Image (cartoon, rainbow, N blue to C red; front, top):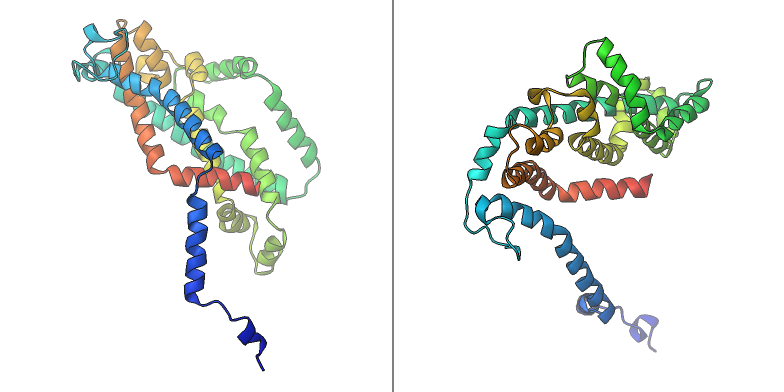
Length: 301
């Protein structure tokens, strides 16, 4: 008399391996619709990256042969003099240091203040917290062009005009970051706070030893967005900065063409290439971490 195990034998390792290989072959099998989507994405990718490639090619081309028609996608004749001329027309290293310092202070300072304020709104029950949060969110509806006037008057009264402090001091308070982190903190169970308080933990210990590590993807995403916004900022430096040695790179690149002796277009392209390539290399090096931080933030929040 046959048993159930004899009638229906359990698949062995060879059967499991065969099923896994069949699943992989099925996954690799491309449908016509998938091929069309891939082709469309490749075309759009080439169209998006072509201006950057053309920019780099023109920055490496002799000025007399630049802007040829039809455009040349190879730097012929090749030259590096355009990059050397950048330092004759503008204080590039000083402006690069200004942009880096401004972005670092603005990003780190705003995150510290945002983390502290978000913890207060998310974990501490005080009178008027909801009204205060709504009042802060209403500030996001006010255009930056309106609030820049009183900020400029305040900075002029304290003597900070034409300094980097006039840019990073207002950037320390970021309403969007406060709201975003407060909502993210609310997704973390309060039972963890209660368990920590039983062991004698205070607010700062709970915040920096528990909530901040658990919110690392959200903080990383905000740091990336904040650094990019500060690095590419043009409106603020245009209002507050006037000396070439105090300018940031976005303002310096614009004045490179209209001021400092009106540099040729290929020299301007060389300066833009020197600004873009380091950031592009950093993004390619940390692409996986950046994408994972933004994606996990969207799923968690």
